[in-house]
Image 1 (cartoon, helix red, strand yellow):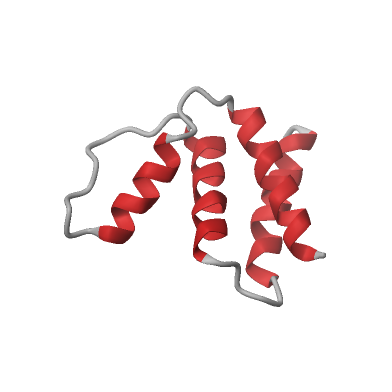
Image 2: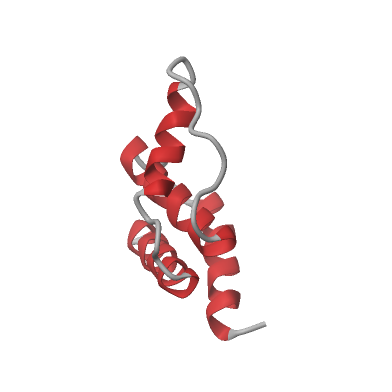
Amino acid sequence: MSDLKAKFETAAQDVQQLSKRPDNDTLLKLYSLYKQGREGDVSGKRPGLTDFKGRAKYDAWAKLKGTSGEEAMQGYIDLVESLKS
């Protein structure tokens, strides 16, 4: 496993141990960076109007379209590190 992937996996575990729950915007950013880092560009159909949470997650992830997996992983790691302090 590459060093970046190892740090990414560690950050994914660290985020579960945060002393304070991040705000919704930060949670969406974490979600979108994680998904982009793990799966690449968003795929599938955008959730319907009544699925507010699913739609927000989809839209946040879609904003990262074209971002490389490595960039997304590093962004995720950096964001988790900033939340730990």
